[in-house]
Image (tube, rainbow, N blue to C red; front, top):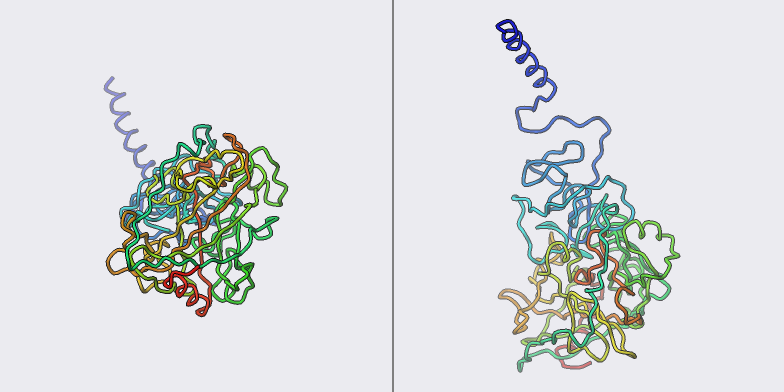
Length: 437
């Protein structure tokens, strides 16, 4: 027995020494170097930056640690592939190839500031679409959440009433309209999101309909937008876009069908029967011009997984616009169309045409009073109303979403880049402040 104890005493230190040599961690706290040729793709989405994270979190075989990041390469802030939050290339839209991550911790990076208005990730960018705008990511295409559910459809007569702030004497009550068509035949559609994922093809993992500017894609710039034509009859070169609606039992015959199916977006795309683009006033004051090239997003493409704080979109039916759902698809009476109402924020900080999370520069007025926060300027409020002829039957239709959002109606969102020239914007402001239509 004594000999065995002495032998064990010799063997144990040797084993420990060998293990230490194989797993040594550098003194600076970083993890062991990655193999040569290892490349990480950072996701971008509705609500995500297109730059990799910096700071304490180090990479190791596609995972991260430090600075609030977990060992699955996930966290709540625009980080690694497969994260589940509005991140970088491969975010919740078709065409990414990185391996999926098994879960999304949803934990914010302690070095980031959480933005309650931001779709898609905690304190980064959405929707969020965006958006945000609104995550998803490489690998999430293999983590498709089933949906929609039958209980996410309801008779419009069960919807809560829509409440509007009372107009004051100084209200600006005019309306300026741009007639830009319906994108019939899907002539201009793609899964990009130039606001939150510039330069990233498939940056949204769901298909967007576009009207207005003819140039809009992941690679658009202020210069290319200013030089492009438009579908708007009044010369408005602005770009307006939103995720498509599909008939679930239909067939997708587009060249993107395989990728859309991999992301869980199946069925035939429905062209809106009508698209109404309006700029409205403020119930408390006059409005001032929106600067050219201002980016504005509404809704949260990650609202199903992150919560409904930024879910500003409404689902209603024609003839029943005084009531609407935020979290259910409406079943409309015969002769009535499903309508999506996308209201955009309209209180500008007076300085910036965009912000890091695409929301801080333009916020919503107080929903009860219509008053903009102190230090903010009221600008024309964009409202996009989309009407669809779809069956009044549960599960018959659904919104394109990020794979992990399960076609939840609460994730509806929209995006806008103002490319009106100064003359047209002045015309809009004059009409709105002059109470004209």
